[in-house]
Structures are given as structure tokens and as C-alpha cells.
Length: 107
Image 1 (cartoon, rainbow, N blue to C red):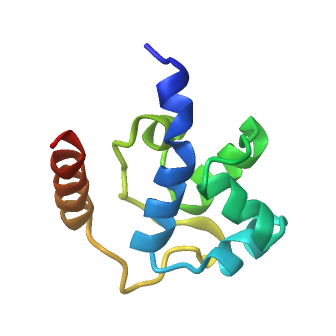
Image 2: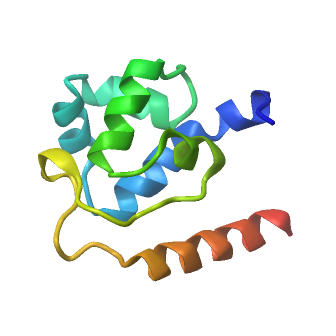
């Protein structure tokens, strides 16, 4: 089930996806049609992200909305608008990084 905690980590998960895909904050903001400042505020959890923008982010990173909300990324497939560079991380590498982050957070 979803709760307020699910919403609090969305910005962090967007930043993690963006970083893993080696996309700058400015590049992602431009692809989404928002300012870099607004993107920074989303990632920092200072503003909420609306569903329409969240869907666009999921499409750019070729993942499901639930992947961003829950943090279990599906990195299979191609991304639209060139957001995922060819030298990006493999699905196994992303899963390993996420497990490491989860372990570090639980300590």
C-alpha cells in the first residue's frame, strides 16, 4: 500500500535514475519542458511532482510509475527522447546499486 513515505522519496528516486542514466539535471529539465530550478526542487523534495510530469519522467527513463514510487526500477527497453545514453548501466548494475543504497540506508 502507498503512504506519505512513498511520496517523500520520489525526488530522490528521480535523481538516482537521472544519475544512473548519466543525464544532467539541465538536460532532463529541458526534455520535460521545465526549468532546471524546478527540477532541482523536485529532486530535493521541496515541491511535489504532478502525475502528468511523473508519467513523462517514467516514459523518458523507460520505467513504470510504480518503479519511481517504490524504487524498484525496470531498466529494460529503450527510452524516448534520447534520455538514456548507450553507455548507461545494465539492469543488473542498477539492481546492485539499489540494493547497496537500501543496505546503507537501513544502518
